[in-house]
Length: 356
Image 1 (cartoon, rainbow, N blue to C red):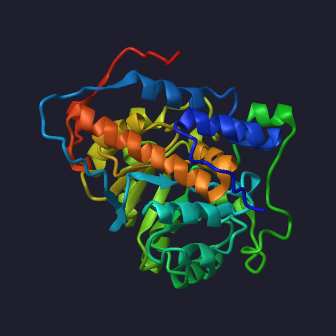
Image 2 (cartoon, rainbow, N blue to C red; image 1 turned 45 degrees about the vertical axis):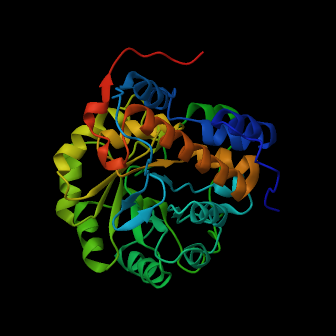
């Protein structure tokens, strides 16, 4: 049964996370919390965000602040999207449907993972033309074509191809805890009629991405880009969106953080594709930093899990409400009335100062 506790008393993100840790299964918590290897990339995501400081400007008319944005033509009520997470059912039985309900309530977009147990069609139907479908390549081109036909008929706004996990990252914490999550051999209810083969993720290459872009009328977003060169190659393949991500630090240990590479990727793309980012973002102020560097929106993954664990769809909606309040408050206090006014002049690399 989907969690339905009262979440109105949750005033901060820390309170949401504390509530989640009180109720979530320890194994499920460890699964989401784990990073690749020793967790250095995961730590670097947070440390780099902390090192990028905001630069306030004063005496500007900020009586009205508008935090709306858009992604490949889809309007966003706030510049936060719900990143694709395959195991959402570990945190609430509503799975991807609960996330879609929360996103719809807040006029933003959820990315429905291909591994979801929720019906893809029902997720899309919560707000036709708003939510996105996340694709892992688990078959050949004929398999992809079958999946895409179904996605197009389901009224998704676009498709997001995750390309940064040719093989699943080795996570020390998960290995030590002994908790694993994967699809059963027969797959999910969604995949059972299509079949799946994880080995195809390691075979998907640039010509395949170009072919996919040519096969669908939906905008294609490619997730897992960490260099300007790959961003430019993806754009040349025809993608409409670049999703800067290191999978929350869950695939490659000792890698760069996403906030460190975001600016150079946006500069390389030069406005020819919308750019979004995730990995390590939990607070509205950090969202503002990414927007200042040119991102259209920021995705939340682990925080999405904690919101669902804290209270199902209503808990996740509360997370989005808190982020909405934090973003609006931060923008007003640094002198920005709109997301478009957030530019690189509002951020500067500085000395890290972790909260006590």
